[in-house]
Image (tube, rainbow, N blue to C red):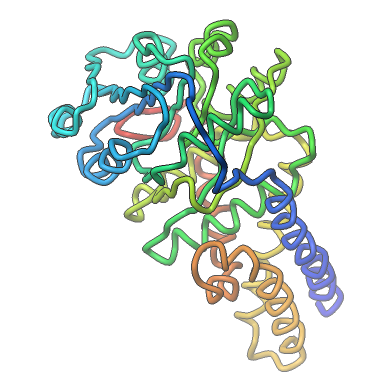
Length: 359
């Protein structure tokens, strides 16, 4: 029994540095400059797919209607068959509203909404962003300027994640640690919350129509663009925008199920192994701590938990509270259970529920 415990502790001492490495990989992403002299920029279309997003649009749209963009911009909200006041609120804020009724066979809701928005957009650059984001006034102009200055076909941004429940912060810091631990310098990952593409790139690649039925459309689109030779890197920014992905435990559970089941195809072996290692090692540590009353195991339980907690401090800072690091094994358990359950649902053909649909 002691040998079995020691093996898990040894793995914990390996998982700890891997968590530190994953945060370093995040910091290695190019950072979107916050201050740059910008004069005139090409036309920009901002496209927001929205399904029952009335509450989120009340926060998002004021941030988009007040952007400082040195050029012509337009705001398009694609109402994906909402049953709330999504369309009404969008119009109140001056957005052009495209209302969808039926979802064609072979499409996911988001891919169809984004593609329909792109089809009516007039901008030279297209910015696809989610309804649960909030944007800095200078964010879009800095993104377009960076893409042009660096000769890019587009870019995507990973930005500040806002959490409110505690459990969402625990789960996300573990999930992101697993994701970034396996990323190489040649990764094709883009963040669906913020995708900027030149109009010609979108048209020539097929854009969202080429990944129409994918539940993880951003990962699929990133791989498509990379395969066709386009330069669309993932950047990081603490100021360009922020997002609160989950506001209750139901949306958190459904989101983690979707992430776990849908990302297997796209992340690649290195990312999957890293993610499984980080989450897989931490769960048995919980068992060690429950056996804390066994005096001979006490030092192993404390050592394992301490290694993991200290290793997750850099990630926890990004989620607003160092205290989250000390509960990281609990977050790993949530991610594991949700991911496995989502995968089981998919294997049996049931899929996972997202935005009121099966995906």
